[in-house]
Length: 552
Image 1 (cartoon, one colour):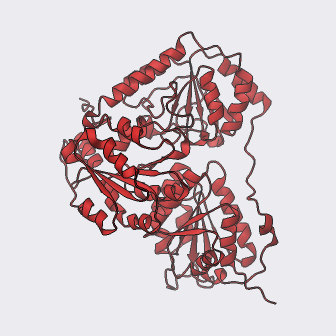
Image 2 (cartoon, helix red, strand yellow):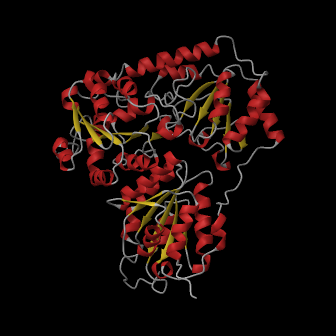
Image 3 (cartoon, one colour):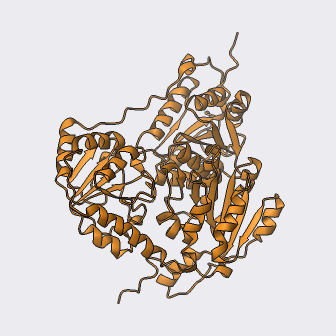
């Protein structure tokens, strides 16, 4: 008897075998067999985005919170092209996202014959923004290609991978692969450095008296060992994407106060005799385009060999998994590392003073972080868009307890926060998701608000409404002598917009009522909205680097 099992069924079963519980995307002519497989199996939730761009960001947010594979399923041609912005952000963030797209029939592909949605060299387009891009060329190699793509997405440095599945192959029947019965994604084991490398690393660390640990996205699994290094006397700072590897209320964890624009921090770096950088690019975005001077004695640990000296020069480099390498390091230096007398106390004082100095620059908004932290559940997801609030207190001083609470546009793109938050909420389980966005970013993808409505997600959306592109105005102040062209927006009334779908709505008109107002929204199960009327609260103060006087 002929099998009724198709490649579309195989895609659906493969995703479930990889532990994927939610897939994002839009139904279209070139992906119906795959969606039919998902629907009939009924083991995966398919979340219908309003656009492929939003769906790609949702898959990214889901991956960050679930710590697993995020999946965006699109149509071919224009649909695949619409995912590009989301896949670029996933590449920035190091998120394991699998993009599965349709394609015209195999016999028409790559021939420019004008079939519906037939793109010009779609594979090259996807390959230009992803870690890799593949095409399934036969039913027999479908499982192999899907496996390779998922493995590549999940292998450090993680990132998005795209797979084309021609529509005729989606419908092709085949015998169900028996290996799916007990399928395990064949991920390569993390590299543990050799004993020689680890001994040399330990010797260099033991020689330090004032050591600093700098963690990035690649070190998110190394929290236990990082906390032990703090116990041994290290101070610590993180990239914005590496935050909360150790809970940020730890007195020796500066978190996102990387020193950019903060002499109190950069002056302290001059007294540090070892900077141990783990799983971090030391990005220009967080070092004022590499103008933050770090200690000359810089040692790097990274799973990617190419990371060696990519931004700052390394005195010693160890290629290895962050958690495994730091675990081995701790076992070698315990009882041997002797930090300078008073160093830990100095670092604790540095954190107190740096946070105070930073908050003092925020004017009326200086209390927002403390107010929100008091009312927001400790385990809630903190998702943000690029706003003045996130660029300042949201990224730098709002304390978090775990790395997968931290969701924001690493590439600093506008309009991504709501969609990232929807994907995060889909993976959050019983935890609340709080999204902070500006009005400019919110209205860029406002249609996705109804994805959250339809899916009944437990989210509170905070819209910092200054009726324009506040970040752009700051750049114009600094670079165009204050001429603010094309940065003011007319937008729908948020209260009336919320009423369209019975979303409970709250407004903040005074800075000191922010926390209490958000608390009322958080107390409601489901989707709620809080508008911060920045015209009433006051203009957001200029912040670094826009508070600097022009040279000359």
